[in-house]
Image 1 (cartoon, protein in one colour):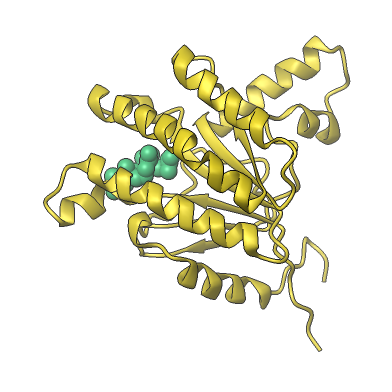
Image 2: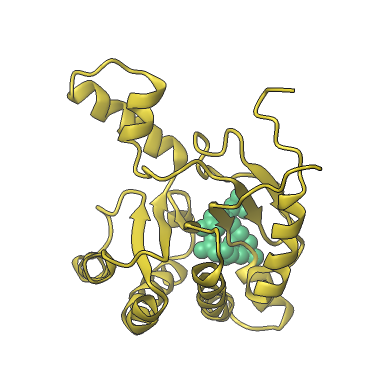
Length: 228
Ligand code: IPE
Ligand code: IPE
Ligand code: MG
């Protein structure tokens, strides 16, 4: 009998908000707004899932600053509102909030909301929701390598891994929505042996039902890690 893979760490590149809005002749920001609802639905599903321990979501990349100022500030405001309004849900679901990425360029107000949410949820144990904010994998690896050097440690896979923003387990499954088939500077180190799944569905239309089907597909894959 073949064994079933256990999904502990799921990562998602949430893509397609702009196209979702454009198809409806709406402003791109409307796509982000509905996308935030999907974040809530998917996080709820994962918190209730038996084996998922960590959900890492790509919310804002180091390259996303290239977007129009108005869209960037909308995304910052949306994040602040989301964290503030969702605190009760984080507590009800037993979800701990964490981040990866360099938070230094964010406004003092947003940084405060982020810290407050981390502090309030730090004892929750059902799920860790990790938001990648101003995250770029190359940036993370360079910052980690500098930390190892500053600590006068020998650079090894272990010391570098430990110095990354994300001291979480290896990622089992990565999903990218919207049909794009690229990593866009997401978790290059941590995805070394992850299973990849690309769906055409745009992020605002992504649902727990579709996620469940993707997990079933993942469970049946033959993961070999270089062995036979
Ligand atoms: C993903 O949707 C959300 C962020 C990157 C913040 P996009 O905004 O990239 O949507 P598309 O790719 O333009 O459709
Ligand atoms: C990746 O999506 C970043 C996030 C989902 C936050 P992008 O839409 O920015 O990626 P590219 O530009 O299509 O590669
Ligand atoms: Mg995109």
